[in-house]
Length: 535
Image 1 (spheres, rainbow, N blue to C red):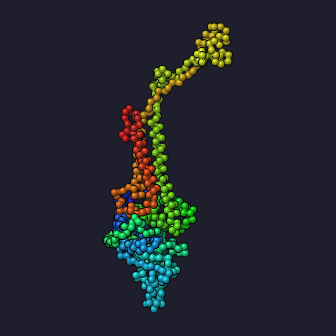
Image 2 (cartoon, rainbow, N blue to C red):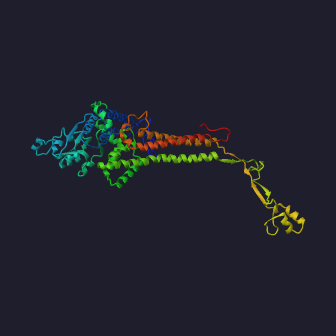
Image 3 (cartoon, one colour):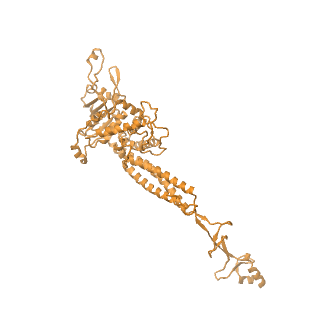
């Protein structure tokens, strides 16, 4: 575990792709089996140095070397599937060079191989004591790193005996069960047969190794022998225990579990079964990947190793990769989508505040402008209504229907009554012409404008941080710090390259829209005429 103070940054529910380094002092209360932040970064640096040293002369095997280091650190085994002559044994020998004082064992297995070839000859002295024991020194039970070529060609007696060594790390030697110091077995085979599921499942990490492509052929011809790393850069086996204990304390965010659950569901729908034991070990593998990178939390880049842990047969590899790419794309799209919704809401808010108007008022009340342009408190102008012939209209004294002055003469008894009726405004039929309200552009307090700018700044800062994390995890952005992290040169992040580029493009466009929003809010008119917040 990388111990930090309690206020260390958390993912808070979102996908934490690639946390940027923080300069924080390590906690002083650190036991010997826990990595402090400084020792974790030093471990990551040494892993990087080992990786660079061991990959010298290897062509197109960067991923295989990284997976070998990861498997050994996690206490798991690596299965290489591919034709002969693709440097599988060379990879195992180089993994052996990563450890100080490591014993190495290598054997090519056939159907005629006998247990003595792997586990050592019988002890004659022990037989004299009626004890069935083997001389294991120099054989697999005493090795730290081993390479077993054509492992599935061995007979059942050998395969069954390998199960305890590979899984429980014990070897039954006579009446005694002895622990074995084995860190990692790299096995090779042309294919994975269906009749050895128990042994096959013991290899958590699997990789298809193919001949070098035409692009790498020239490099293959010019490849040189490896220069062994210095003793100070090599790992010691007591450090493996520290790495594994620290991995048990690495944070696995909730989104990681959700993503893995989605992968499991999709695999089941395709008929691909992954055992519960393999799922549990896969989580430990992800945590170990984080430890080797000097991190205390699993990030998206770590999940690239899932493509090497979830398939059983070669025909399942492309299906697993396709499912991982789809689920990762959905995960990567979620964060830009959240920012998009925020940006659109802010854009609507800015448009409303820019277009907002306020009514003109004086001490008496609301001000209006009449048709002649004069300012008045009246909301409308009332005028005597005329018909289409220009004749003024009145309410009929009998039916209240519209009538003209001429009609009134026929309805009232004399001309005086007509004049009196026509001069009463309450008898008129009138038109109301509404006046235009006197309005002006709304002005805002400086506090309001400043709060809007701060709101956009916070969102913009979070978006930029997320973009940096994503860029680092996908290899798009270079970083000054964190160069010691093995993630930055290992292929797992490439599994999500296309999705990462799409998400980065969306984040860049959203960042530009937020910059425009910031300038827009900063330029809102304030209550002090002519003043505005500096953009």
